[in-house]
Image (cartoon, rainbow over all chains, first blue to last red):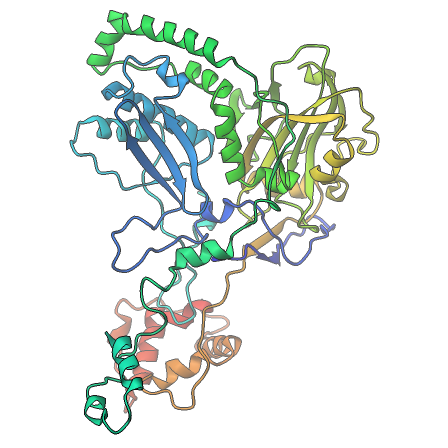
Length: 176
Length: 402
């Protein structure tokens, strides 16, 4: 409902070497549902004015602890949980001594980071504030960052209106 | 309390409530239904997006998930866990925060257990099944491993990672587990990049009748074409699907001779392809990556495909401009009127003003260090002063022609 139409408008490129033209329809639609988010122009909810911040994200990291296990998830604002990792999985449990100690937190972070990179999710919002600077949760976040996940999302790019003061650079045109 | 008061006053006769009327504040109406009765945006969206499960359900078309005896599995696992608990070295490592699990092994176990469902979830998140199979899905029971080799560097394909077209210029190495008596089909398609039909795909690679996992012994139906996402269109999914065949199939309808560099010939629809052969084909393996434009593609379009390189730009919806009023109070007239003029005309005026001071043969004067320090000759109204200052500072609409 709030989605922007993903219809890039065509402008023919200049090229003198070749003669043939591809048959191209006027509107090109990229159906990849993650494309606009990755290009930073997809819709991202802003949340409400008087609300505690935490609703403004595409993908968000959540950590849930129970008496025995820890569960880490990556949630999407529309699709819900998309990536999961937990020490209750046999793959992790098999190699851990205990499923809730510090090394379990650290290893869970490593595994989740690996999965996120495999699934193409590199930038993830995290509102988790570790209660102790070198505690279990901090270890988990550190392992995620060491694994290559950035715990911050870029803001949504909004196009400049004609009367705006400046024209910001388009993020997808920066290739270097 | 406002709505209670309103109700009250309507029951009273106009004569006796004349004293009350003074207390009714007409400026502060409660708009809409009171809180608690009115639905929130979330509830409204849920109602709009509700889908009847008896109509919108999905069908599993894949190979069955491996069946495991729960009790046996539990027994084995308990044995392993007991052994772990008795291991003093492991306890020491865990206590000293030095226990690092083997990620490779964890990954292999994961892919055989809960990983199937996780991969299905992420494929749903990327809209893979929706765009290839409509209302059907499958579990990736056969773990498919693909690597692109470029300059002795391996670029593995997982489930949505980004690989640049330059790295995927040669066909990938394919690994999966199977016995030699079975036949397989591997198809790579791109559902995001079709230039003319939005609901169609381009087939990038099609190998049929593969005996076991020996891909080079299979019948190449369509030769490999590297990803060609055009500039400005963002990230395209490139999806590999491995089908298990019941018998040897005839794919001569899809056979394309040579390298097949005409993109129209590569038009493909996985759904139609699967529908016709659903008795003989069962999807079992899945892997996909995303690719976006890079510099190597300009050369590829010009020299290999022999076409002009298409360049796209995202078409943003225009800003909301509310209907024009006869008397726009408390709004600067120039800014207000500009919103309702043709933007092309405005840009033309800016350009004409600029060209007045441009000499065709002389170099342009160097930019002033303090552009706003220029004295205004004679009387200049404040709005015009501001406009000039904005142009000197390169703020606002002048950016559209610069």
